Picture 1: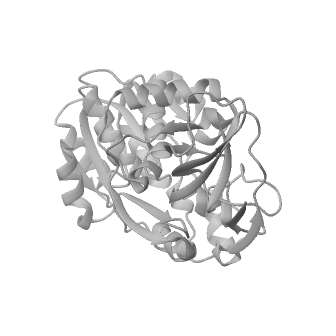
Picture 2 (picture 1 turned 135 degrees about the horizontal axis):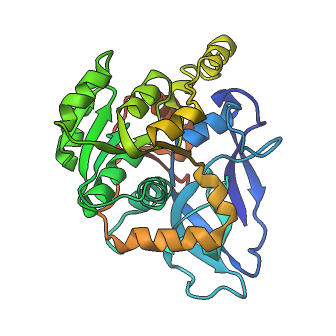
Length: 341
């Protein structure tokens, strides 16, 4: 089977991405072949292509961590799936393609009422939000939760999950044009990040304790969020948007400066303040399907509405899509449509 697939040399620029045509092998016994209809974009894609992601494969590789599509071929040991079935799933890189082979443990039936774009927009960010809030954050009813990048894909799903658990939620956003989105999602309060972030956060808390922070910004915002945590509070970090390159390739001097001035938390302070800082990279769960699949099953049992798809792009416009995505001005999830969709 011929397929179109994006490749990058593992270089330092989005401009390294290019499409090639190649043969796709038959699926292994426990895998399926999927005709990809939609591909979800993630910050990890930007960092991988620009050489800032430690989990990136060595040498040439295909970016992309999530997709939705139709099964076109089954391995002989596959159970519970059928040819022609619509699915969504994850892959440890390789999603920027028209067709792919993936083990059955990494796919899930696409909900009947969902589009391919909604399926491709859900899995990675849904798992990220659920794992951070519930598995690591131990979210409990009545707790106060601060969610950074609240109008983005993870932030929207984090709000919906937190409300299922009866939490008080505060949105942190980077610009005023995202206010309507967080209001519509039902956040209890919101902050447009500025030099007054810490003071604005205290106002939003209204004398409540801050129990949980979902953090992805880094820098000063990280430290001020940690400062606001109550004793026994938890800050869960899953990314550093502060490191996102503004151009097609990262600037070496600005990257080094951000690295040298990155936030630091003293372990002695963690003990005396009785606070926790936890970090995770979802992609490492991809090597542990025995953990990944049950978490996805629990997430789907919440029966959340589909993700907001902010914008879609043709498969051929991946560079333009990633360029707009990393600027941080978009709302919801950005999605590529496969070249044959």
